[in-house]
Length: 386
Image (cartoon, rainbow, N blue to C red):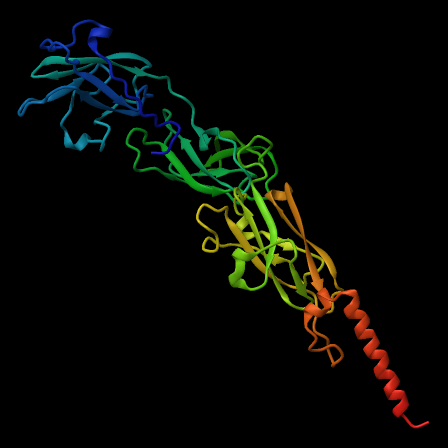
């Protein structure tokens, strides 16, 4: 069970400690006496506890019975209808019970074999709890628990509200809870990734719109010292073909205008939901590259990998252009530089000249090309009629 009010406590107590002499027969030397354990100890009126007997060798045909002034009737320890599936037998505390300590005994054939106490707590007003009051990050999900165990409360339909939620949240009755029959909950309620840091009111209303309980939800982005602050990022780095993501590099990578470049980004601690909104931007791109998470493209034990494609603007002037990735709601910004070379020419001209000539030609090569062009012009002039 996931609830702040469903506490499993092993309250193993021996009468020798509490009131002296708890066994119908003395324990053997070195043998621990039987003890009573309680699950969901310290109940409120209307709750139930689980009772089990530890360290007692049960004999066939011998019934064990638990008795206490707080019970409405003695409880058979082997009653299959009261089996809790691991917490002993269910022992309800009447809603009319008064707070205080009540003696508890377990008997075999009418003889006491173990003693203990049941500490009944005061009642409390209905309350709403959000993930046990933990601070949550924007973009994460939260669980809600509404405790309506209070004399006179009989509602069956409840709704949680908050400006931190995208819409009101219906709270479903937890029918599997045997110790508190007035628990209503909701799981995996999303918080928008755009949520600002702060304390948000969360309140519960019944079917008539009456406010029943209220609490606060604390939302805060990661800060220095937090495990997830800034993450551990690498990139952006570049590769040419989609299948070469592991060969990506930042230095020395060139791409011709009009071609497609792929961008890779890695982050050990991405913010929740960033898989759906990560992009790489550049003045060299026609549109930003959408970076999608790709578990298959990373090595085992590598940080999560994101990658995507962008087309370089056709006709872009050769040069070095920044490529930037912003993550963690603006707290992380990394930039690498991409070298763009002249792309394939249109309508003849330099069409067919390899990009490498434009990207890496030295001064001598350029001079040789210029001399060849001058010689060609002179030959054409001599051949033309005067």
